[in-house]
Each structure stands twice: as C-alpha cells, then as structure tokens.
Length: 564
View (cartoon, rainbow, N blue to C red):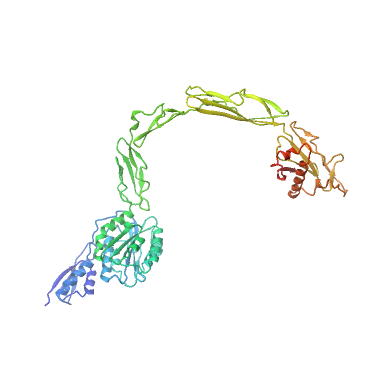
C-alpha cells in the first residue's frame, strides 16, 4: 500500500541523493524552500518508485550525508590564508564516507571569511592519481566554494598521498598562492599511503616551503607514524574513528587553524595590560604597566607572517626600590626589575658604590724623546711627572731614573715612574722611551754609469757602501772597487760622499779580480748579483764584518739596498 508524502527540500543536491539511493517513492511530493544562499523556491514533480519503508530507511541515510552541521562557532575574523584540503578518494574510502569528508570540508568553510583578499581555499583529491583539483583563485565566496565542493567526484583506486602533497607544493602554492599569508594544508585520509618514504619526503618539502600541515586520520587503518611525519607538529594530528565523527573535531581543527593564521592572544603581563584586540597578521598590540611598575622589554609586538608575535612578552617590574637612597658617594640610583642598580661616580665601585677603586692620577707624564748626536754620549733631562689622589690620600713614587735625567749612549731606553696609593694598594705608571742616535748620514747618489750598494739594516748607526760600474765603463783614474765608503756617528762619509764616475772605455780587458764589480743592466736579476757580491765583500771586510757577525739574521742579500 502506498501513501502520498510531502518533503520540504532545502538543497537541490538532495534530490540527486534520493535518486542515487532509489529512495523516491510513489506519491512523495518534494518542495524546495528558500535558505540564506539558495535560489528561488519552486515545486518539484512527484516521483513514484518504492515503498514507504524503503523511503524511511534511505531518508535518514541521505539526511546524514546531505545535512551535516552547517554553522561553526569559530571565526578567524579578518585573518588571511591560502588553505588546501587534500581528500583521500582511494578504494578504502566508500562513496558515502567520501561524501561525509566533503561535507566536513563544507562545514570547515563556514569558519573562515572567504574572499579574494581574505581566506582562499583550494582542493586536491587523490587516489592512484591526483584528480579534480581546484585552485585558490577560482571560488571567492562561501556559496560558490561549497557548491564546487559538492561537485568533487568519487574516484576510488590506490593511495598515492605523495602525489597530492607534491601537487599542492608545485602547483597550488607555487602558481596560485600569495606571498605574505599563511599557507595551510589539511590532509584527510583513512589508510596508509602506497609509498610512505615519498609521502614523508614530499611533506618535508612542503613544510620547508613555509606551509603548515594538519593531518586527519580516520579509522583504525591509518599509519599513525605517517600522520605524525606529515604534520608540522604532533599537535596538528587529529584522529577520528569514522568519517561521521569528523564533525567532532570540526571546532577544534578550525580553532587550531585560526591560531595558525592569526597569532592568537599575545598574553598579558602581571601588573599590566595590553591595548589592541585584532590579532591578525600585520596588526600590533601595545603594553602598559600599572602605576608604580615599569615596563621591561618591548612595548609593542606585531603579528608576523609566520603567525608568531614579534619579540617576547614584556614584564612589569616594581620600580620603587630607590626610595631608600641606598647608593653611596653621590652615586645615581636606577630601578632594575624589583631591585636597584647604582651608577657610581669615577673612582668608586661596589654594589652601593662604597669602594674606593681610584688609582693615583698623573699629571704631565713626559712623551717619548729622540735625539741625534755626533758624540757617543749625550746628557738628557726631563721634568718629572706629578702623581696625586683625587680623594686626598697619600701617594708614594719611585723611578728607575730618580734624578730625572742621565747620560745616554747611542741606543734605546725606557724610563719608568711608579706611583702607589697605600689606601687601596692601587698603582699608576708613567712610562716613556728615549732613543739616542748618531747624526744621520746623507744618502749617496749612485755614480754616473754605475751603481752603489749599501747595508739596509742598522742604518741609523752605521752605513757601509761599495760601487759597481756598468759593463763597457771603468772607474775614474785613481779609484778602486775595493774602496769602502763609510758613515758613522759623525754623520760624514769617509773617504768622501762624492763617488767616482764610471767612464766609457773601449778596452776589452778587465782584471779578473774586478769582473764581479761590473753589471750589464740595472735590472732585478743583476741587482741580485750585486747584493750577493756586497754580502761577500762585507763578510771579509776587516773592521766592518761585525755588521754581519753581530746581526747574522739581517746580513742577507735581500736586506741590501742597491741604487743605480
């Protein structure tokens, strides 16, 4: 026996579901009513098919699929993000369960402010392959987005989760994602992926790009380690026993996602408060302390692109510790945290600036002195430095030259004055150097058509030079290559500072003893030969070989000066 039944329909898609489950029965009149985002109502035709008992059974099945909870109490406000839902459409997920996953997706939409400049959503469905995706820029209203979710088809097949993760990284975010907004991925799956290694590697790549991954596991067949490996952190892993139970985590998942998109409550310091209630990216809050407290730390924090607050939570520190004037000797008291700090005047130290750390002070410490003299000894005097204590304590003084002068031979000397303050045992030194040098020798000009080689070390005390001639010339008559030109403390060259010239000659004969005193051209290679010759002559020069014997580390060809 059949009866006529009327049903008020709020969603056109339910008609298809009744048809898919063969639930339309004879005499059932279906009406469409207007809902906030639906079209104008109209009357549907009467369908005649099965018995009333069949209808009742299917009615509750279809209603559970088509009318999940539609309203979310969580709202992310003005936060912005690009969110990808990755849906498992493999063979282990039945078609009714896949519909429940889509309905869960739709209820999640209600928790966000959807728009082109707000939260955008995309979808990647996978089984053996990725299929029926849509991108962030395609649907920018809740109505159009939920209608598109309804049209995601069931596929069945394998569980190649890694392909969906790879698609999200290399297509969804790379080509359609925005910079400067949170990148969120929500993976819903009921089993183990076909290739766990690839799944974890693609998850790592996705996280490295800045995306935050939530993993939702449904049922007992899920690989828990794989869920943990995919998610950005363990708190972002959600478990439910069935697809119907997804609604149980909707509020928590939406809230957690909102916290990722926004920075959440920045925290309130004890004995203080913050000003500002918008916690979305780019917004800021300012901190203020109660009376008698001082802010320690940053006064402003900004919600950053990675959904964390800049800086750290400041503290409000009791700021009246200096009321008792604990600092001594005229020090300045500064409140630090709940205590105080003393800024001491010069010469004092200690927590309360109670300790005298002032060493003796010095006036007119002489500077370094340099003198030249043709005499080996020279008398030098100076004005002694003055030592004193700014606080009036006694100062004792000593010196290695107590008469403030002495007779100095050519050389280098250090004069030291030491002052001791017995009150605290601190000392102060006055030190300066005295350099006594022979009268400097003028540089020798190389002879015409020749060269001159001299020692390049100990030049301030002794200069010794020899001459060379260019090939094709010879020394002026009366001069000898064996002559050494020397300048000492007198500052005068002996035998003369005027070197002989090298005159051109046609004579081809050169004395074998003089052949090493000739050079073809003034080039580095021939200068090196003259330097070698100079060292050989110096080592055998009676009365002058001490330049090599006493300074063997310096008596080397590279330290010889050659000018030509």
